[in-house]
Length: 233
Image 1 (cartoon, rainbow, N blue to C red):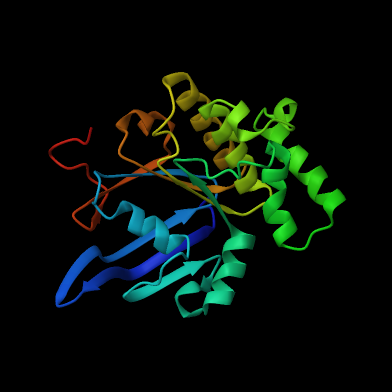
Image 2: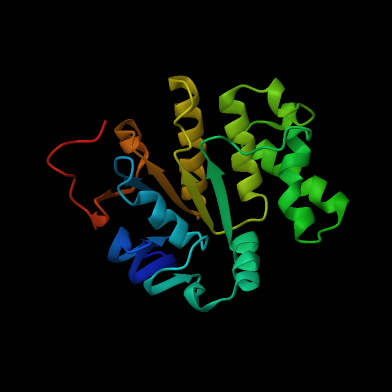
C-alpha cells in the first residue's frame, strides 16, 4: 500500500540572478517524498541538492513551478504563513547541530514548542520524551559543549521531532561525525522513518546508502534516479 505523499515539487526550479548573470541552482524538477521512507539525496558540492532541500523545507521560493507540503501549496504562501508551516510541519537537522550554547539539551529541545506557545510544563514533558526517543534523556541537563558531536546531533534530532512534524530534513547530518556516531545517528533517522515520518537526508557520503529506502542523485542542477558514471566521494 502506497504511503501518503508528505512533500513534493512540481516542475520547480531555482535560478539566482547576479547582475546580468543567471545561475541555475536547480533545473525544473518533479520530486516527492512519502511518509515512512528515508530518502537519500546524493550529490557533490554545488550540485543543487541543498537547493532542493531548501525548496521542500520552504526556506526559499522556487523561480518557477510549485512546492507542496502536506497538500498545501507552499509556493503561494507569504513569509508568515511559511514560518508557521515550517514550525508545525518540518523538522530540520543540520551538519553543525545549531544548538544554542547557553541552553542545556532539554532547553534546546523545548525551544520549538515554546515558540508555538505551548505551556512550559507540557513542553518539558514532550521534550523529555523526545530525548528519551533518541537515547539522550540522561544528558538532558548537559550543555552542548559537554556533549560529543554524535550526542549533539541526537539532541538536534530530538529538537526536530519534538513538534511531531511529519517531515524531517537533514543537511549533511553526519559530515562532522566519527564512524560510530554516524551509525547511531543514521539508525535513529531510520527508526523515525519506520515510525511514519518522511525523512530526507542530503549528503555526498555514499556510505549512508545502506540506510536508504530510496536514493535520488543531483548533479549540475538535475535530479535523476540513476547514479552518475563517476561516483561521488
